[in-house]
Image 1 (tube, rainbow, N blue to C red):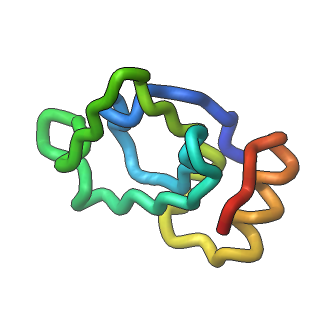
Image 2: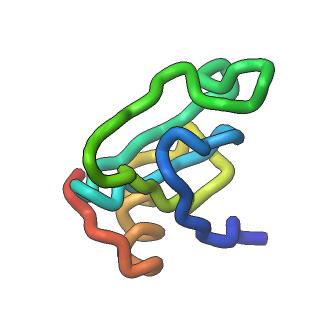
Length: 80
């Protein structure tokens, strides 16, 4: 079953997966060890606007071509 896409602020990523950065279209692959035991990412991004990401897959290690196709199918900006 495909992952339901969901858009969240970067600082609220709480599970591994493949994400698209909404502000740039870059691909971001988040493995389980990038999430703390409290369920938040080890890295935070701050700015005047809340940076959001769209999760396109539960598979954090998917290949680039598959990620590009999924992002296009979800109408996400693709810049990778």
